[in-house]
Amino acid sequence: MKKMVLIKSMIYACLYFIFVGAVFAQEELKTLSDDPFYQAKRQTETAKLNASFDPLERATLHTGYAEERLAEVKAVVSKGRHEFAGDLLKNYETSINGAVDEINRAQAQGRDVSEALSAVERSTTKHTEVLTDLLGKVPEEARPAIKRAIEVSKRGRNTALDRLERIQRGEIPAGKPEGVGPPGKPERPERVERPGRSGIPGGIDRPGGFGGPGGGRPGGGPPGGRGR
Image 1 (cartoon, rainbow, N blue to C red):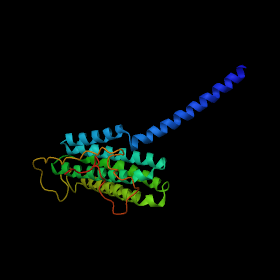
Image 2 (cartoon, one colour):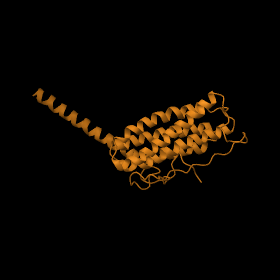
Image 3 (tube, helix red, strand yellow):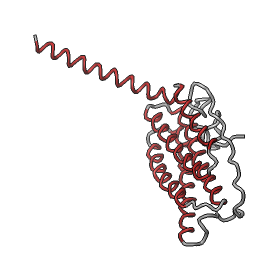
Image 4 (cartoon, rainbow, N blue to C red):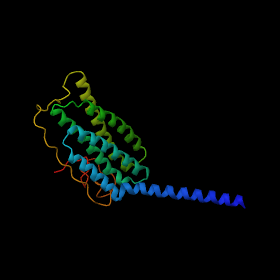
């Protein structure tokens, strides 16, 4: 009798953990697709960017948001929801480009940007490895968007690495990139549009999979993009 009770208890425990695991997986995906907390997360990111007037701080934010978008891409790909990945990758690209733009702005103001450049170089090196790994995990139609993101990641890394090496060799000062005018009054950064309040992640207004090679600005104003 005790043996039967023990067996039943073990069966119930197994069923419980299977059920909890399934619910957790669904909730994790829901957070990426239609949960209002995701919208709040993206709006918080945008608010932080718009509240900061320090280009180095904004560069750090953009770099962090690129990490977030890449983690979200990995999550949707692992669950076979490739229709969301294309626009998340566009958001990733926007954040990487935004980080480089803010570093240029800081350098034009005479700021030392070596640390920010190093952060971009380290991050994009890792990003390229992750994106390359994802290429083998998605269907053929999903690969152009990943390849495009890889190119953006490599370009960001090469830009940061080249600038760092030239600064270290003394070819250019840490506080002024080539082709940029002398430091002046710090310019007010452009406001970033808040993500839309749709039932899917900000920047994914038409979950139709990966875009064509030409790409485009994601609808809904990604946190890493530029406002009007």
